[in-house]
Image (cartoon, rainbow, N blue to C red):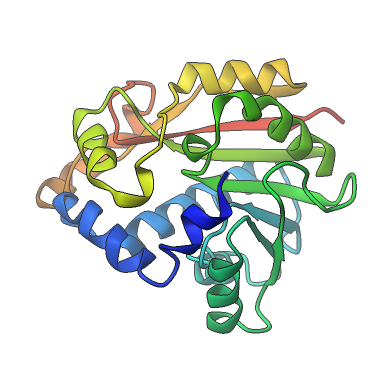
Length: 233
């Protein structure tokens, strides 16, 4: 993860991102909110407390913050990123509502068994593949026993997603990850992981069909997917 690479896009991040996702008919906030909403459902499924501690790994300018506060107002949220400029923007936007912490892209500067949940949204495709295992082990380390890691990623089997990534300036060096490979990585590093769940099959003009997505999440054609993993008790 390259700090300079993300610092240069920090001020224009939301504008650039909106230009990329515009073809879906949705705005950036739609994508931020649905991820948090899905995460909250997972948190409830695993029986974690409402005042839980959450780490947003690769938080950028804090796009998840308002939605975690909306759906889990009692949570203790920490935002972690390699981009100092992004963290500064986020800390100004959401002063006093979350903790913002910088890390070097290698070792997470937080204590063992600290968080009930770690959330990450389309971050790992920016990280060199050789560093994936080390960082997942770091995430495993900072989770409490029984805690969960939920990771969202772009689906390389969806051609519209691939086209959007190819057109995105801050995805220039991105390497998309297959859902089954991400799950295999999690299992290799000590997590117990479910199968990937695929999301966003229909653009906004066909949003009335999104009701059926709950029955389609096993089909590897959605624009994005997430994997859930739990640290053994």
